[in-house]
Image (cartoon, rainbow, N blue to C red; front, side, top):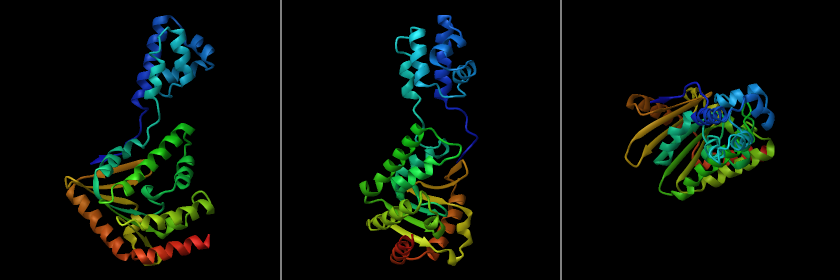
Length: 272
C-alpha cells in the first residue's frame, strides 16, 4: 500500500536551485547582484536556490549568462515542468494504464476518465491554493490523454457508477455541465464502457464514504484506489481489496441499469 504524505518541494526544484547557487558562488556573484539583473528580490533568489520556490526560466537565463554556464543552467528548464499528476496518484495512474478491467465509483465528481476538457479545466483551474497556468495546462492535457485508452483499448472493460450528486453539481456552469452530461451518454454507448447512476433516493450509505477504483492488470494483479483531500492510497492487500470490492458490489447492485441511467442523465441535462 502506498499512502499520500505531506508534499515536499520537488527534487528538481532543489537540485536546480542548488546548481544556480553553486554556479553563482563559483563566479563570485552575490544574490543581490543576481536578483538585480533578473528583477527579483534577495529573498526570492534565496527561496529559489533553496528549492522552496521553483526557479524561473528568467532566473536560469540570467544566471547562465552572468555565470558563464554555457547553457548548462538553461537546460534545467526541461526538468522543471510541472508534474502532470498529483504525486500521490502516480502509482495509481501507472496501474490504471496496465488494467484489463476497471470499476469506478464516484460520489461527488464525474470520473476523470469521463470528463470533458471544459469540465476538467474548470476543476483543475479552480484548485485551491491556485495553480499556475502551466500546471493547469499540463494536468488537463494529462487527464485527456488518460481517456484515450477507453477507445484505444476496446478489450478493456470499464465500469462507472456515479452518484446522482455528481450529475447535479454544476462544475463550470450550466453549459459545461450540459456538455458533460451528453458526453457521458456518448461514452456509455462504447461497447466496453458501462455508465450507471446511483440515485440519492436509493440511500446506499456505503457510497457516502467516498470514491473508489478497483483494478485488475494483465498479470491478474488486483488493486484498489481511494482518494481524499490531498491524499491517495493504492492498496494491494487482499483484505482491503475484498472490503472495497464487496462495498462496490452493493453500490453497483443498487444503481440503475445502463439503460435507466442513460434516461436519467438525459433528464438531468434537459433540466439545465
